[in-house]
Length: 108
Image 1: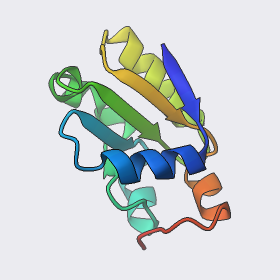
Image 2: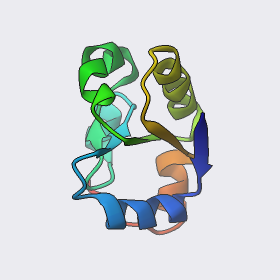
Image 3: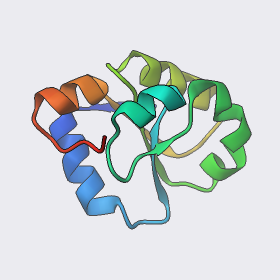
Image 4: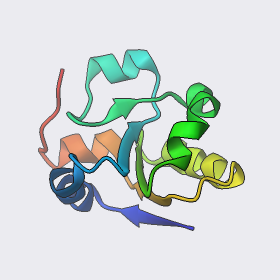
């Protein structure tokens, strides 16, 4: 299962859990999109690279997944579920577009 979070809920979670080694924050957009603008503390693991990180995902208790608008992140979560990743999965609704619209900080 997974849970949808608003960008505000994601901001709060990022602030509270960014130093927790059992939690992972990933952005599944392309490297070019990530370089253009990203959220500090969220690492870039593009959709086509997810399979390379399954061992790392298996060690996490919670994984937050973010993209541009929420569609790719949901696809990534479905992929993670099919790969039998047991972490609690969090989809960020509205992605970085919603994050920027809410006036939350971006790294450019």
